[in-house]
Length: 107
Ligand SMILES: N=c1c2ncn([C@@H]3O[C@H](COP(=O)(O)OP(=O)(O)OP(=O)(O)O)[C@@H](O)[C@H]3O)c2ncn1[C@@H]1O[C@H](COP(=O)(O)O)[C@@H](O)[C@H]1O
Image 1: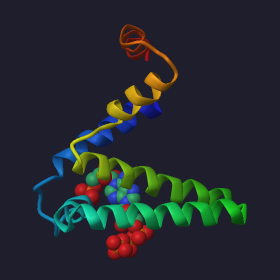
Image 2: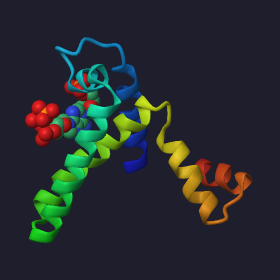
Image 3: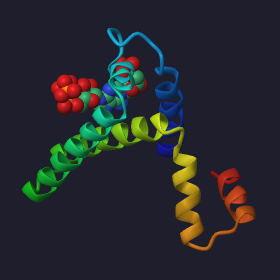
Image 4: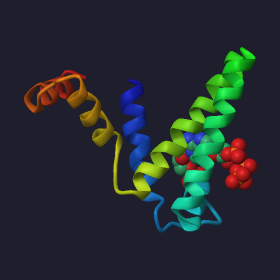
């Protein structure tokens, strides 16, 4: 379920490229460019680490959500997606292309 949601969110994020920055935070990030998107990702990573070290589960969950969102935006800006990341992680696990396709179909 979580994966379906993230895949849908990726589609929304891609649709925001070229949208009006005044009506969409995501569009405003794309308009500011990759350096700004990467900076925001770094900030969210630091905030995630701080929340974890504070032992604040609620804050950690929120910061992790911000972190994943900004990662998706950065990947989209670079023409990449979670599928590319998934494929790389499966490659590291030694999962073949055929196994990968079967794994996706069973989700
Ligand atoms: N999932 C998210 C999401 N997660 C986090 N954020 C934004 O990420 C920002 C987090 O950064 P900060 O805490 O630094 O907030 P900020 O002060 O507003 O940011 P800066 O001014 O510092 O740049 C906030 O503005 C959040 O609203 C998100 N913005 C949008 N989405 C989703 O993206 C899709 C497109 O939304 P729009 O951007 O509104 O078109 C929709 O499905 C949204 O639900």
